[in-house]
Length: 104
Image (tube, rainbow, N blue to C red):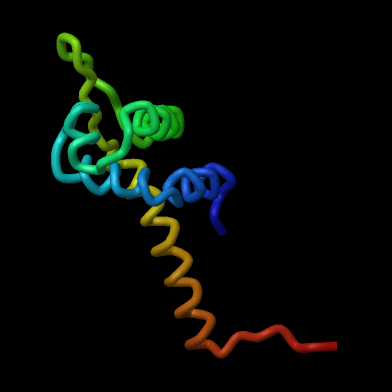
């Protein structure tokens, strides 16, 4: 069963732009300027999405002069993936044992 924290994280990642940002940050640490170039989003829109990702603990920030770099926190994604792996394993067990609740 997913926790409420994991459900909140799924909601955060359900935005196509935020999912694109996460995909880009999985490959390299980028600043806002790079993310604007890669996504085509407006800077203010992108900043709002980055704030949501930051507050959810998905990304870390690193100031560098006039820029802020963003880095994906892989442990957050791994934890969510682990929960889905557990759900899949439980579903396989249920199917293999042909477990079903009788109707009354």
